[in-house]
Image 1 (cartoon, rainbow, N blue to C red):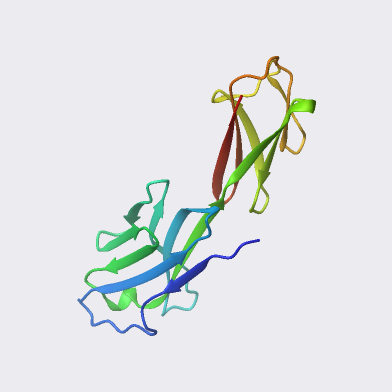
Image 2: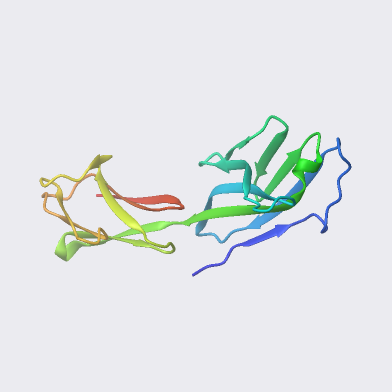
Length: 181
């Protein structure tokens, strides 16, 4: 299991004058086999009897497209740094802020030629789910059959030809690898 380092670069605590702008920054260090799939900024309100975490902004997808949940909330993701900006800060914006970074480790597909099988392995994840594609379509019986756990594709087509893709997914996201034969 790998760990990811997320460092909030602001000094703690941050004091903001009402009506001004709050800027929070976080630096994210990933391992070479990791790909950031989502960044979420949240706030736990300072007041109330039963405070609930409020999602302020998210960045997701391969292009890390970012969006705030309110017009005065902006978020940005550049390389390994994310910035949250709240314009027109008010007392309702006070609380404890957190940034959640979700990363997917890369998947690998290997072949066992003597047994005509492709094996899919993933380097990280909880409760992974495996699925296979041949030329971007779900595997049919003419191509082969998938093991019960989904990690192995037993190829029955002859000759073995085309692009075989293993997709590994869980509640955090998905990753894939393709073997070209």
